[in-house]
Length: 178
Image 1 (cartoon, rainbow, N blue to C red):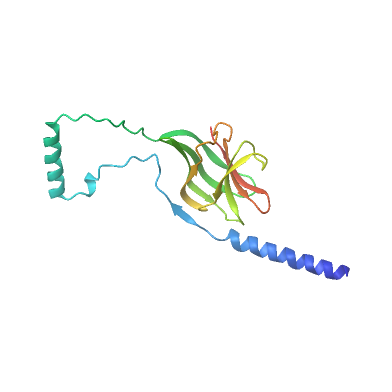
Image 2: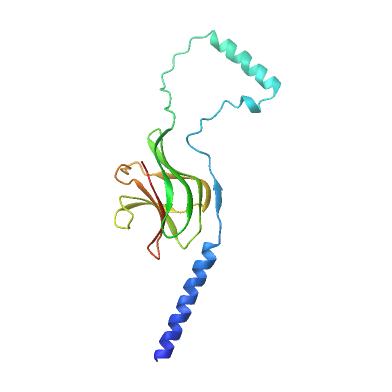
């Protein structure tokens, strides 16, 4: 009976180790646009005829008085940032908290880490799993990625960004927003 239990335990550990090994080796690269970048006027992609027509229309519009009722949208603002620090695994990159109108975006720039089983991105008040907001599964292990922050989240309180392995309750890495 004792040998049987040891055998089952060894098989179980081998399955877990294999799963972790196969998951860690998988690289997911994503390149999302930064909310901080302003949209340009596309003049650089216009042909000569289009540019000429556009400039002619702008000159005509200068003669008219236009009263706008709409407020101009505020430009996106960088609220806080922090460099990722390794905890259980190596990591590179920065976390940025960006205000875009009435919403906030958490952005990872030049981010790189190993993969793992069921990694999630959390905003937390500490480096543990006792008080956090789950922003969902990790989108990429490499690249530039945006995560929407729910409107009701107090980002002054939840100022730590955690890369958290849910099934093993392991903190892969973190960044403190400041």
